[in-house]
Image 1: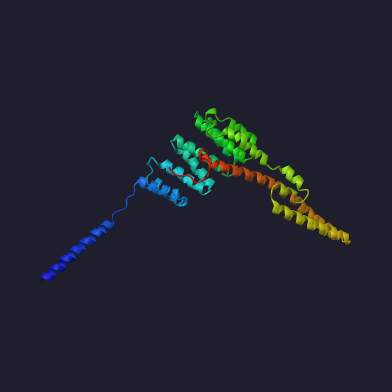
Image 2 (image 1 turned 45 degrees about the vertical axis):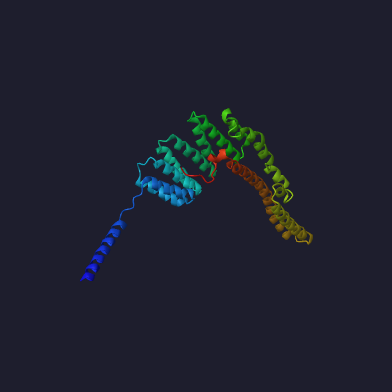
Length: 301
């Protein structure tokens, strides 16, 4: 009888424990707005941008009245930027600009929109946004920031004279901050001196491979010389062996390769200049005060 009472007591205690654990396991998981935003930002900082987009959207859905709503929207756009989906980023930035009451957030969105258009090679749109920023603010810091970015973009698109004009327009108080003197007196001169002339490349290509050597494309130069030389030799041999029809056909074939060699040399000059300017932009992005304009990894709020 004594043992029976002990067994019954143990069964009651066990059932109570199971009920308690069951009720605890069914407690709803409550996540605050701060925790949700923190988790989304954690994903962003770990470069899990597409997961971060979902979590920022979740934040905006469950906490539509949060003061961080527009910060989340900005971060969604930045996720698209990091994923190189610039069209999507522009759409989100535009929506943010129309809805956000924060002037600072709107200005940041405008700068980022300009950079997105720059990446899409939309020169007109990229510059117009920066002109809009300049015309709508009296803040010298913001104006100079826009003028500096306009100068950088002009270099990227190969208009060094326009770049010089924008850099000279930066206010005297910020000339040192942006190293304007160094850019004007050294960097622009280096870019200009390193520039390859497409006209000269095409002229040198009259000798197959010459234009490619000028553009430092030595492998292409050797191939161009050998191919054109080989076809010319074949045409000469055909005529020399009284096969004018074959010689004419090979000569016509060679004419296409010869013109292609000139066109390729001109294209190489343009490509060389673009690559050199892009390398310069990348170098500038590594300087701390230029981080605002770079598309390198950026931290969230």
